[in-house]
View 1 (tube, rainbow, N blue to C red):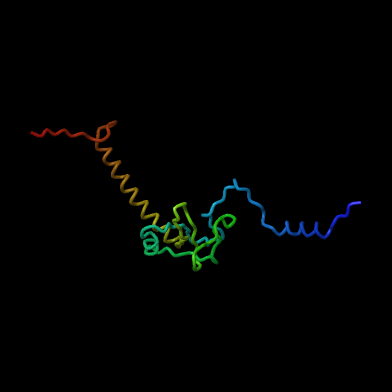
View 2: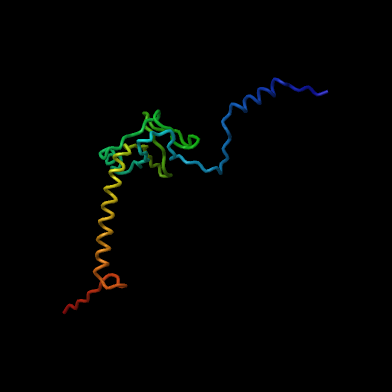
Length: 146
């Protein structure tokens, strides 16, 4: 008669219950998802290239600390930076991106200013179109040099 070791079976079951859920390799995960962020803030990952971080800081954006939000599905890549700002590798060349935030009020002001500039440019294009004959686009000048 075969003996079964009930202690070993219960230990295996307990070990499986404590393990995190297995994630298949083909499962799509995002390391740029921000969870539990404040509703009054806008979050963005800023690539650390050139002077982009400096420019964002000058515009009022601040680094987000690890204890303020959760970032990434299933902790795709843990933060490898010293300190406690959130940093992720954003591509295969080693470029790092830092999670930064700006109060929504300031973000909305910036977006409104940007929209005004776009509207001004579109208005100028429409004005130019109105001044030309219908159905014609652009203009042509011919000059003869001797």
